[in-house]
Image (cartoon, rainbow, N blue to C red):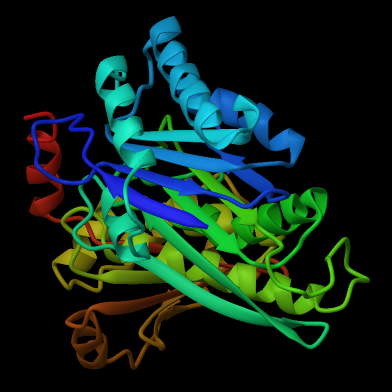
Length: 388
């Protein structure tokens, strides 16, 4: 496996903004993509490519999302695919491309071509270099690792991700890539990634906005002697699934921790919903509420705003059964303020960086945990100047 970073200079910056990964023959691929109706050409083409189950290379461009660019955007992607395929000797459909950055500006074909040519002839680099090269407003490189035993053989999973703003995915976060040396049948890899996504990437939000480019891809190179995983009956399938979900959860939480302008990482735990999906939707309504997020930024235990967010979620709820807690301290139980409620420990909890908010709906057995961050002046500053 080859991974390297290079400067294509899609923006006026002097940093690596192109990552190239060459994959072994026989590599399986699976993916989940944005549900945006205005998706980029990279996403539209990627949806079709993963159906083949095979991949030989990955190219990621940072600084230009190539979204809302019509036929010119697609032509730029096709040029990259053909250029890489010619170099490594594979079908262009086995070259997956992602782009992230400013919307509405076609990917410059000349810079793309030169950047690919340079990347193809660059020495190996590390995962941190690759993670930095796919970033935009991120403040640190994001990576994760897990391992599993398959038939007595250890396999490793490594993931990198970028994302800081425009994070409220219907499927995944901005751009994430997971690589494993395990051998996994493509259809089953897709099943595992889709399941992991529902528990991780689809449970994070920074600002309530879904990107045009959201993509998460998983690649299984089969470079270890471990037996091939073809389904749940295969040796080590459960362990591999757990490891994949673990990597996805680590990466998803790193995105939230690096939310634009964020100072606090917030876990919203919802229980007692009519279903797990209903609990997730209630959690996202709370996590996306500017009033809840600014209250926590100001370290104010204003649980009335949580009541508001639950009520607007559009999910079954009953005011007289609702309970709310901060940091394990219940402020309201069964629709009423707790009589001997002491706000001092809650105030102390809100001064920390890791905030725990719990909601009990009293409607059923559905549960979910959603992760978000606070909303500060920093978010406004970053996004007011994003294109300059």
